[in-house]
Length: 329
Image 1: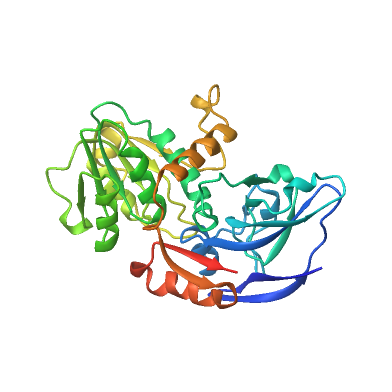
Image 2 (image 1 turned 60 degrees about the horizontal axis):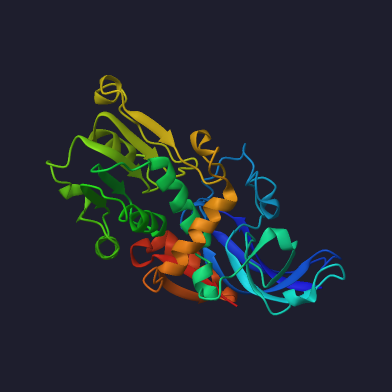
């Protein structure tokens, strides 16, 4: 059976190819893709050849096994409709819309346990945001916001905006968002941020805060996050910098102020919470918040799959105009 698939073939080079796919096997579903979301974080690192070669693409998602080396497929937010099933799968699956952690391609096979049925109230395009909401949920758990704390979020990309959406539900004294792009600051305010500002106008009064969440994707911003927290403050690093480097000043306030620097990554749940939280509970929480939120403001661009090159050029060259880019099929 044939399909069309997106491949990263070199630095800043992508193409769609015809491929042959197996299945569905006796215990699998065949899914025709309708939408897939393009990650402005990890996918852009892959596009720019800024991923470290010594680590696996993903150790928890079967469809993303392998290494970061060209040519490669990547992507993890596909939504589509089940069109056929293997002989051992209930035919009731046919016609069901599902989400899968699968790279960008026109159709794919998956085991029923590896996809999520869409809730009745969630549109297929909106469901491509599920990994983003799950990441924001994980970031919120790692942040551990407490009553009357002051929190600063650096970076209002789509993950930053969803993190703001969740943090705004807590009784914080102030939720501050720092981002250089005016439209993103506006969206952050609409989603519940109390204060928004560009980096160069970070209020001098915003200092000694309880928590800073670094989501800009720029390693030099980590210095700003460290500078803004007070004694015994927490810095949650949700950005993945890939091979990007920047000098970080750990010789001043960081050392004497006993600042906690915490890595947050969605592949795992922090050990302190594993007694009560697992990945199923986290995903269920993400689905609930997706159902409760108007997602129209998050999707800024819709680009046909066969023109996917434009999506990556947009994120690489004109990121200020984009929030979430979605491929349509």
